[in-house]
Length: 232
Length: 230
Figure 1: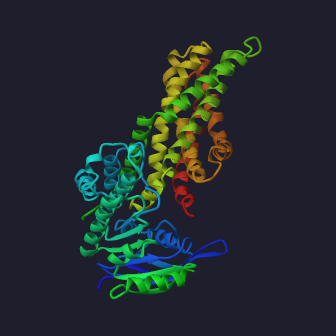
Figure 2: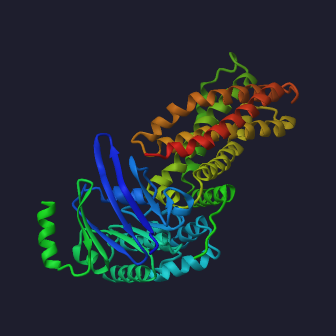
Figure 3: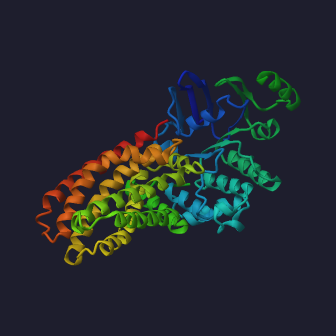
């Protein structure tokens, strides 16, 4: 099976603090890793390493065989972050078309329209981002992350700010991407929504996986109880 | 989906176009820089004693001090729009070369600085009653040459300081010493041209400007990616 994401003994230090401390895992097409853990566990740092935004202090991160931050790897990654990563003076459509052009898509307008429709925000496409509500901004931010149909989607608390309709659209989109053969990493504090999509589940604490297993067969109640003990 | 990431110049053009579109829509930096430039000129004018210093001696200094500081306002703004909602992360995750982000920002900043100069130069000519006439085109050439160097340095330091807590303070402190090799030949060439001397007389200063432009543009473009590492 092709490996889409490969982290090998990934370490990232900030001064004396080891924010990520020896992560190793692989994800193939159709895999979804739900990543849980308390604040400060190193989840966001791990995602930033896998997006090529941070250099590892040691170890390596590869996407589809290419070492980050090589262009071949970055072309295949989409990132949904805590921040919306949009230009608030531009409209939703302008933000997406700009991103589509950065990725060299053959038809940026069509790609932008498709992504806006997938997030059910096409009717607000001509509104400047600053005039959108927080939830709609988050939908546009997700649309920006998927406009180039990435093979690897890294999502850091993607449900933040979304209403029920937006959450449902996001779940459908993540499921569709996973079923289409993309690899997903979803960082969330909500066990139920994370496990609903996951093929693997991991709990991070102090930069390490303290638990990492296949998601199939996990009993939510039991997992939640054990998770509370792990992060206490 | 089949994609082919844009090359360095194509990506730089995308970034520049986006920055100019944002500035065209908000006009925040341009208006601030314009107001700053005009207020500076007024202050210099009223602080000027024409019996002690002639307008031809004073005007080049006033011109370049005003251009330098008003330009810094726009350069700071060019990275402020990226850090507001971490939009820079989206640029860095995308497959465009880091150098093209710098080139795009520098190109947009160059348009910005030249736009401010296009308004400030006639204002200086008006205040100091300068006979620009035949000197206008060579003077415009000096301004373009000097702006390339100023923008290269200013864009690099604006990128470096964008995520610091005191970016507005740090940017001039870091950039101004590097502006000196650009501003001196620019002011000297300007003084000669508005005094009615020929372009040939200013040639030695223009050569210096071209040399510094090449050095700073090259060095800043290839230094920029290193400023992005955490």
